[in-house]
Image (tube, rainbow, N blue to C red):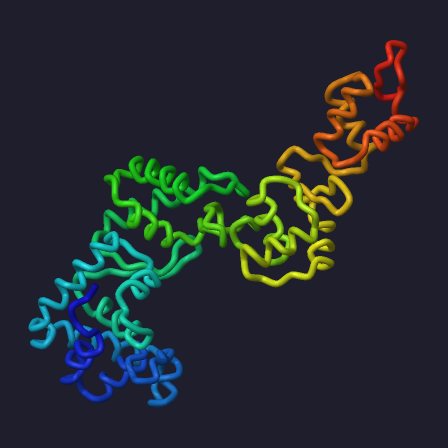
Length: 340
């Protein structure tokens, strides 16, 4: 996307600086061949001066570069970089900028240096809500962050949405914040500024604190596997599904143990698990019958069998046997109710 070599430009910008200023900027931004940036403390210890003095040298060096003739001669460079940031959305997470603009890994630090020294560009450091980001329009970044905050607040904690649906919802919040419609790819990049929303390995979006988005363990992978399948699965099939969807080898026994421990899953048959959010209630057949009669009142044997089989993969005879429990009473009209 850039028409120039970031390494070449930084080399030319640093060439006329005093040696110590050049070395401090090189170390701070990781502009050497090693590509390693160093802290103020580490550089200060090397020179035997305070970190604050190193900061002063760094700031003075940046100012000197901005006021140099070499900087002015690179007007086309700054215009090109500004056009690139504008094309990416005008407000962009630093990691997105580097992924889009750096030709290779070693060029990333040079682009950060150019953005830092260029008078067109402003940055906002990482905080609890947002990633480090660069922008060329203060009012735009304010509005985008406002929309991202209201988007987060509008989503239920464990809700998952397709990318298309999520982008549409984000567009509504952008409009409310005064941002004109933008291409989908720009809005997607803006979403990457937020640390509070994100997408899981299946491309579904939601709050990052949700275990359905920030996947940490086998249970979370199992949840997504079942959700994608859409109906109950045997634990061995869940393990195979995790391997197929996420390229993550998981032993069936391990998967079974995790399913047992997590309240998001309900055992609905021999080794068969469903998601509780689908309307399945935990418990043995007797508990299921109790729940049905509590909510619906007296029912015939056939109605009870029908309701139970919507929640459990069991034989009719098993349901009939459980009806003999002291928890239930057979009424004169043949229907069953909870025993008093």
